[in-house]
Amino acid sequence: MHIEYPSYYERLQKLSGKLARELRSEMAAFAQLNGAATAEGALSTKFKQLIALGIGVTVRCDGCIAYHVHDAIRAGATRQEIMETIGIAVLMGGGPAMVYGCEALEALEQFEAAGLIPVGENPGEIR
Image 1 (cartoon, rainbow, N blue to C red):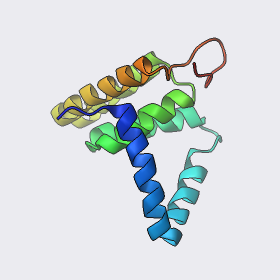
Image 2: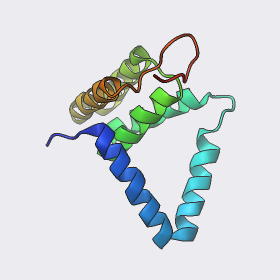
Image 3: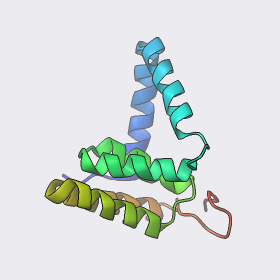
């Protein structure tokens, strides 16, 4: 199965909005948890997104890969940081994680091709 990750990300955004209208309290609680968990703290938002990406690869979640590659890039993660995160996920998850690591690489390349890549000296600056 071939996934167009930028389109998939946008589709998930729309679907999660629809789900939020149907499950207001549950999705509001999830959004609050997401915001609190990924906020700057002792760990940066970028580092937290990289952790989430590694977990997404190891649990074999395409949607998690779409979200967290996107959000790691937006938080200022470099290609090398994302690649090293994939490497750790493969270490921890073995063969199945290697397959989803390939998916994460494809997502990274698609987001790069779509122009969602860090530029300049300012982390999080997107062209």
